[in-house]
Image (cartoon, rainbow, N blue to C red):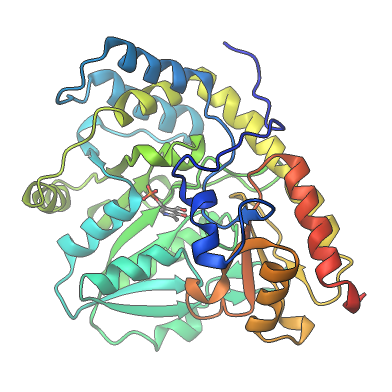
Length: 396
Ligand SMILES: Cc1ncc(COP(=O)(O)O)c(C=O)c1O
């Protein structure tokens, strides 16, 4: 076991071809020279040392031919799901996809026809709507409600009347991006029941399942909460969000029903998909005791950043950061400032020089929000807070 990571270390990512730093000027007009990128959901941290060691071994061997998924890879995934999530996964249920945007697109393509609809509970991770529309399917947006505690919740009464009968797939984001919610068992059972009653396949994207903050409710795995819908369930998980290895473009589609799995694998075969060389050893090395210790240190660190961010924003009248249970993505509502999105966004981008995701891109209900990525060294998060305080100083 190696030493604990130093998440405070400033690692210069500029000029490495990474989207978060190198594309921020083109997308937001915020220069990487003095700007703070808080948009793309990756972290400014190195992964556990076990991952870099595994990659170094591949490079030192130096022959980069076609890979084969070694049994150790599947075993590492099964070990992680059992140890960290109390979930027994059969080896044959796991299909390896090129990341979870790809995994979502495959589900939409395999289980719906052009013109049919896919349900999203919005606001939600923006790439879902992008792939649904790009595949010529309709997005059915069911807006989440904000409860008395300021958290997103499902709005079943309102939603019953909003379906048209053309919906074939329901995509759940669990834990929820951008709201940071960990759904309760009762809420997940209600989702499963809704899908059963409306005869929809449920795609449960659980990519953020390891990023639950200390003190928050435990993440519940849909497959274990609602085993009765195993015949209509696709669970998507990945090591990439947890361990900051999204560039490996690799993820798991876990499908217990043989017929659903056959249809999904059929689309993969039709598109000629198979895993790349580098992701397999990276995932195998991440899903390990060393990786587990790293994640525990990470979530504690992110929780510290969350506290600094929330405490720093609280005194600014009109700004409200949604209580974060999971993910490293703060979801801040500017509605009570009375400013329209172009005005508060200009203050954040032009005055504070921070690039944050525009809430409207997450679908209905997100328009008055910005999403801030807190997975950076603490000094940078503190600097962002100080800049936001200055940019909205006239309100105080
Ligand atoms: C809910 C959700 N699903 C999928 C992804 C992206 O997955 P991948 O990088 O594996 O395509 C993200 C990235 O932020 C996400 O938040």
